Image 1 (cartoon, rainbow, N blue to C red):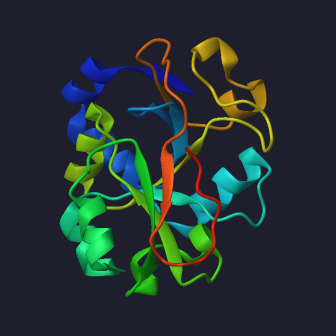
Image 2 (tube, rainbow, N blue to C red; image 1 turned 90 degrees about the vertical axis):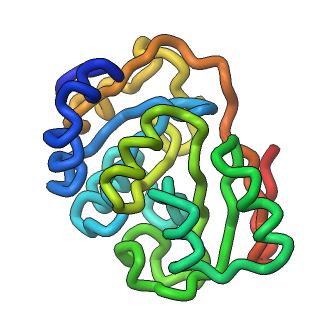
Length: 189
């Protein structure tokens, strides 16, 4: 595992995008908390995230590379359009998929919905440049507190990821989940 920061990523942008597309796992900052993820179109990489989080069934959300990606791959209602206008920001929108093949089946295990977000953070700009959706889930083992500092990361997760992108302690809390698909999903604030 290599610990890197924004300056290192900026200087190695092409390489880092290549690493994303190669299925490498990243711990990374968002506008809320630290996440762990990978290219959401890479099934084996998504399975690795599931294994290190010890999370079998619960679907993952993704950082969308752009609003246009969301519009191409999800069904947007008028209410959904209002929420899209708030991105980037600390929201995860649960939307119906119009293209199920836009993410690996391991992301949402056959569901017709997907949680999408675009954090207001520099790391999301790298995802935008990569052009691929990126799994976003908190850095913790199932049921444990999320990570806000490098000291909080579980050793088993630290040993399993390829890159840890660190920008110091974060004081956020998980994104607000907005169910725009009528799934009855728990809306978390």
